[in-house]
Length: 232
Image (cartoon, rainbow, N blue to C red; front, side, top):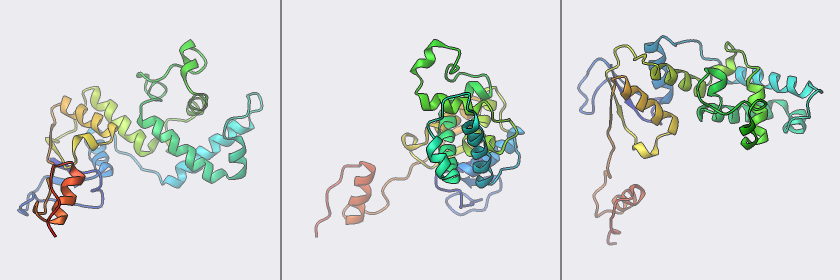
């Protein structure tokens, strides 16, 4: 199987190369499609919950934390009391960002992450709000829909690949984005795939319009290619 990956290509399916010749064994994917393929080929495929189910589950954890009077009120106490769903959605988004950055990795899989908030002197360097969210993370069950967000799925697949589990029958990935513009997590994932024998190459597209046109000038300016304004 050969994949064509582009960050904005999830709605697009293509089973033919650029010249239009039909060819089996190819698929054009964005991040969602890439994760689907990798989960399938590493034995990690599972149900993907609705985002609303994840928000509701996370809101419930936040409410439990709010009810715990043995601890100081959390930073989100007033906001959560005023609007549970909006605050739950926003804090889940922030939580997913921390997962994508690998800051909860030690809690999920025992890998490197941040020191435990209450057991290591170095934890004083951790911002209080992140320490609070780490404490909440410890109460998330492995089977919770919270743990099936896109950031979690990407991290799970990457950890499996880093352990040497190569995706079955995946031979190559052609990346249609410039490497420097890739999401750091995707870049890390592609490096891990390369490490288990998947060929990863980058196919970037240059300016399409002629250089002596205004459109050509704009395209080259956006890409950082030297050019001169077209004469008018």
